[in-house]
Image (cartoon, rainbow over all chains, first blue to last red; front, side, top):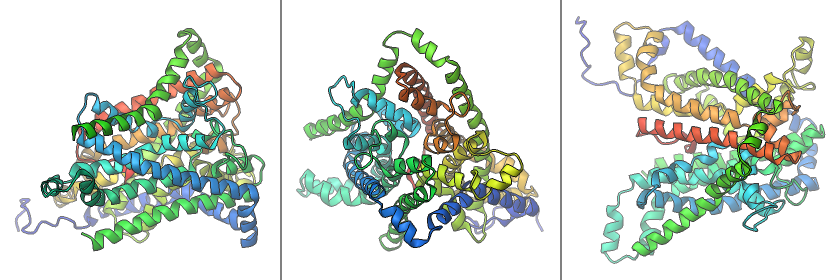
Length: 283
Length: 272
């Protein structure tokens, strides 16, 4: 038996590697246990406690908390504003991605880097920054503070990168020969866009939209200063939850929290489902 | 064609200018409008300095925890085979789907006075909520997914050939990890650490709920910005906001330098 490390005839590329982790079986088990404890302390127990609190009075009590006038108004406002913002993101996010991939202009790299600014900037700073330009002392004369428009503005700011960053790589990979073939066969730019480009980009746009929606539904920091948190007018779900926590009305806070969480999870779950279905049936 | 191209460029850049650039530029202008002296006074006010160091303290605890466990979880997800992998993956991603306020509430319901472990913690003289441990917990939860989600794709890309070769040659698990796997994934980890740090420094909602927001005690820098703003101390609010904005810009620079090192990577931020 040779001891020289020759490459095996058939490379075991995607083999599981029990030898690697199994080499230190005890260490591996210890690591797994510690990760289990860590995730339980940080995520599993808190989420379980949240569900338990929301359901502690039974389904009737949960329903009463969620459909109370103020709670209901906040939830509806959150979902409506998130839907509007996501629609705007789908259009402008795709447009920005297009310009960043297909266009050439000086300073493009800097613009590309700036797209991630909303991810890096603390949300409370985003609120302060937007208020400085679009608040009461706006030098432009545009004052959206304490209106529903301010909710849209703040949500557009914090969710900007999602659609851009999911469409961009697809556009980079996209084969231009199809577009050129269509154009040479007499298709106008609108037809090329509608029949060739958009169908290719749709999965990426949907993915960006779903992530934006999940983020928008839970957003808090950028909204607290600019919206004024007026019940029935500009109070969104997360702000309502916060005010209920301050009033020590934890069952109400937990019930609305569960609704917000469910809305985000349903959209993200649908996204996972669609992308799995596509990879099975389309490719 | 070139005309419509110019039109698209104008619309895209105009949108970015109005939504991102102008507001951020505005706050820098407003902050330094009256020179640097008032800004310096504002950022060196005792409560501002305390808030800054508290933010750093929380980052210094939460980020290494999430880095070590993040790499461990990425290894489990990409190299391990066990039941409950889907559960692990879901739990790791969950913080992205939960509102920060809800994270704070959920922590209060476990570690607060009336929470599941409230009596036990009080009995042992440990205060979690309304003090630093709770703020570290909240920060760790919201910044949990970054290292995992940045490291896992690099591990998948890397494959197991080199690791198996090392194991064949008699290297143990730790040696293989340290000499083969870690050097190959280190930029992925660093990228995750940059994102984790940025998120941890800026976290507001979750920390706001669990901190009690006591000025000079449990106020991090983002909470201090809000406090100053609500007390109509606009200079103080803007000056601290600018400090945080500069840290965010430094994050962007770091992200870009790192992306150039790993050209093939897609941002895991936008992959579900």
